[in-house]
Length: 218
Ligand code: ADP
Image (cartoon, rainbow, N blue to C red; front, side, top):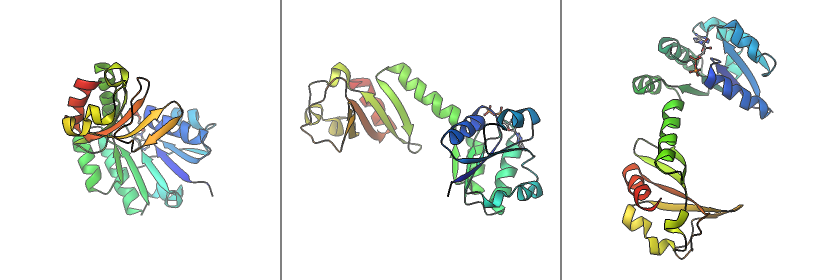
């Protein structure tokens, strides 16, 4: 059976999720108060409806309780975002993901039981900043407030050297968990693995350690 999703709020973020899920063949119910937005998505998703998600009865009538995963992508209107999340929680929705505008909003959402709170603008900003510092930083993924994973191109500084020689764990407190080489991926590489300049290293660690690693080796 196809997994079912509902997206509330069809701005840039919610809209992009709708398009991608539909492209992947998922069943998507798209909801927005704005008629124009709903019209924009009616040929893309399985169902697109004009509705105010802060109205519990409307959500129930739409059959939202049968949906596996609801994504609240309401932008600036924090009150609507919080109220919607609260209603979804009370209706017993199994999985609720909510877009947060700022840290305070995120805290409230977690407190009222959102299963996942995402910060797309903040996260993308961080990724781009790391890429700006060094174009060899290909991606940056936050694991917690203090830990991240970075994907870096080995480049000239690491090329031809082994992991033991670079001593990344002892010197920078980070771990190389995998190396992407052409189409292969070497998971948990051995200490004597010789790095090539085109290798992509996946490195995990505390933010301050990753920062030192990036400064010295990337
Ligand atoms: P983004 O920053 O992702 O572009 P926007 O703020 O532009 O987000 O979009 C949020 C969307 O959420 C808008 O299309 C808006 O009409 C919709 N929206 C806001 N409040 C509600 C609500 N109570 N019910 C349904 N949709 C809502």
